[in-house]
Amino acid sequence: MESGHSYLEADSMHTTIERACRHQRIYKREWETLGRGSRRKAKPYSVAVPHHHDFIAIKGVTSNIVSRPNTNGKKSKV
Image (cartoon, rainbow, N blue to C red; front, side):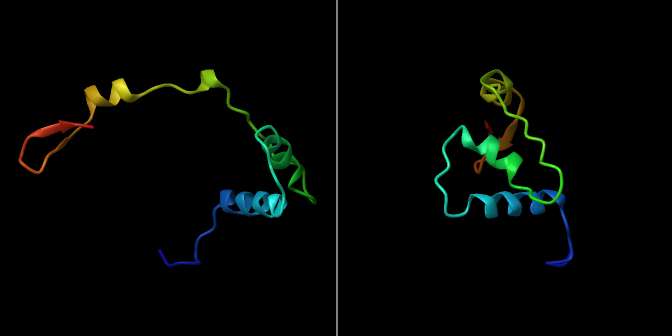
């Protein structure tokens, strides 16, 4: 794939939001409002706000499942 020959909708969204927040102090709770209001000509972006119960700790899961070879030939847990 050549540089400059791909298009992802997420890139456009990120650029639009970055332009909207340029030269502003943004605090934690303002990101949601900024994301929705950053689009001027079309309908606003849909913003899903994650809550603490949406995240899980996977440290225990990965240490039991995933392993990688070590430099001395033994397997070490990740």
